Length: 222
Image 1 (cartoon, rainbow, N blue to C red):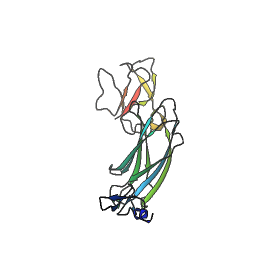
Image 2 (tube, one colour):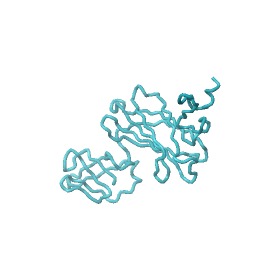
Image 3 (cartoon, helix red, strand yellow):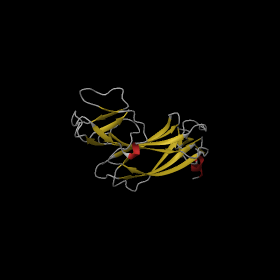
Image 4 (cartoon, rainbow, N blue to C red):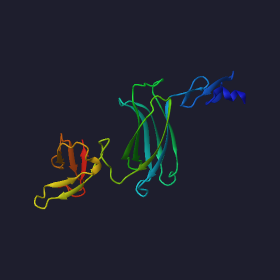
């Protein structure tokens, strides 16, 4: 029993015929006896799905990213609405370097997607507030996933908008941008027709139903 404590936070194993003692360390500890904790972010997440009937299985990817865009570590898990309603997901995100670079700022990036059709759902960003601490403990309750995607963050999906057709000039369509997105810079709205694809435009509007842009249209930020 005393030999078990040789590995502190790890698992003691015996190697070879001589039964040499070695320690198997968990990812968040290191050292011959797993006695040193690694600098890390300890994250506890809970998800609440707002559309239980629409999304059956949700995949979640969590990454620790610095201000240069470098991904230091990442984890992923599967969330099933109903069975996982009150489940807490504990995640350890490790820094790439030891010790970590104190001159950089770090952010937790969380992305959710539908695992049935691989459609992107939403993303969250949580700043690591106390950079001087060797171990940061963060927790969050995430609401997922709204029917309409607000303000494209990854620029890979379309955003639902409201369209009002001008009765005098049917070719003119007035778009109502959601309030949450009006702070974004929009340098001219262009219609994306099937016959003449819109190129080199800041914003395009497109509908999969008809080339004449019937409701509901979708807007995309390039």
